[in-house]
Image (cartoon, rainbow, N blue to C red; front, side):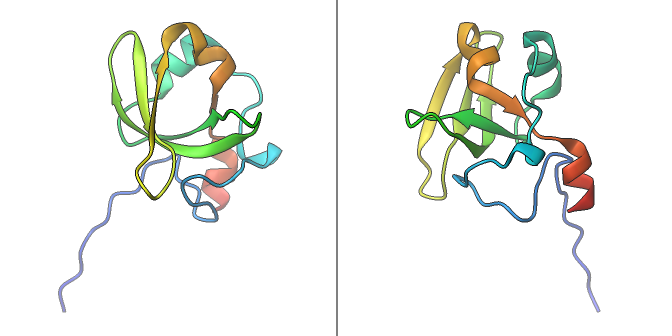
Length: 101
């Protein structure tokens, strides 16, 4: 029997799919810019503010010092978030919820 190891990011929430609306318990309500910068890397999950005013589950596809590009939904829609909007547009995953799965 061959078993394949699967890597799962610490920020993965198994009850959500890309694009799902955040529940308060799933995210950290306010994330300082320094926490966002030091915590989010490629393939980490987060919540992103959408034009309808809701935060939805997304995954980081790319980053540099000035922006994150996130995948917003399973269709592959993306959004680039510039540094000046990180503290208002990004919420980190509550890792306590992620651990409970």
